[in-house]
Length: 117
Image (cartoon, rainbow, N blue to C red; front, side, top):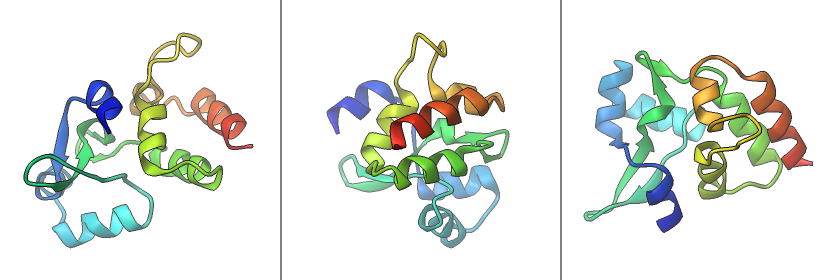
């Protein structure tokens, strides 16, 4: 998971995610189970954490869930999925997560579909 540490610097533990989304922690866990968010275990002590960029203006980043679904259906594991979302792509340009945060899903989805095939 060292690669993720280089790509993602800001992580939120589940209680902080719940606070940002104005939800109970149990609902945040459900969002993770449903594929609306991605959480990984890291740190010392080990906690389940979500990349801060997956929260935009107090809500789950737009179009994130659909992109997660496409990549998971294509065989991506959560760590691979996070690496793809947070790796700069010169042809976009920028990181896929930043395009989703701006509501620009089209090109991100096209690339995700191409990878998933």
